[in-house]
Length: 190
Ligand code: G4P
Image (tube, rainbow, N blue to C red; front, side, top):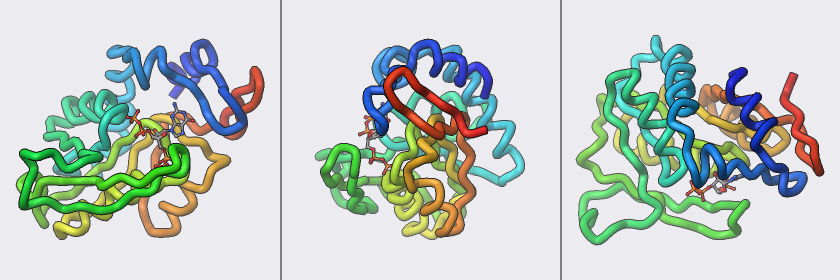
């Protein structure tokens, strides 16, 4: 996605060989116009996949996911990283390990917002090791729903997430694929 590539090059900051900071338009301040364009790209790619619901993981996945949901005229469900007190009882839960943050969390979904008839598109901001997307897919499948694909804003292609998800049979579509990061260096997959 040209507009996103340009923005990453202009405003992204490679903190190390592994981490790209994009706080000014995705992770802290959010650029709604750019999010809208992301929604258009995801809709165009997944429009024939029979999707009935968009899932995302709090918090940075919400902006691109809601724009996609709006354009596809579908509901969006935010998967929680902690079971809130009001979500007691009827929930699906799965433990996700974040290698980037070095900790585990309980991804949580109320049973009210998914059924076995659903066909789910998972949208998230970053793909690193793929654990968050895999956890989201696990929760959807626990209810009997089908997972039609995984849409990612920024994929770090030098990390194992895409391969792991594809090996498990998931279709992955990323708007930007980063081949290499380093000091003053951001290189996209050609
Ligand atoms: P994985 O799901 O692909 O295995 O990734 P991992 O758990 O390792 O990532 C944990 C968190 O770190 C996620 O945010 C993810 O978006 C973020 N992250 C991973 N790599 C990068 C990176 O290079 N740059 C930035 N900016 N973030 C990265 P999170 O904890 O869910 O936070 P948030 O969604 O609340 O912002």
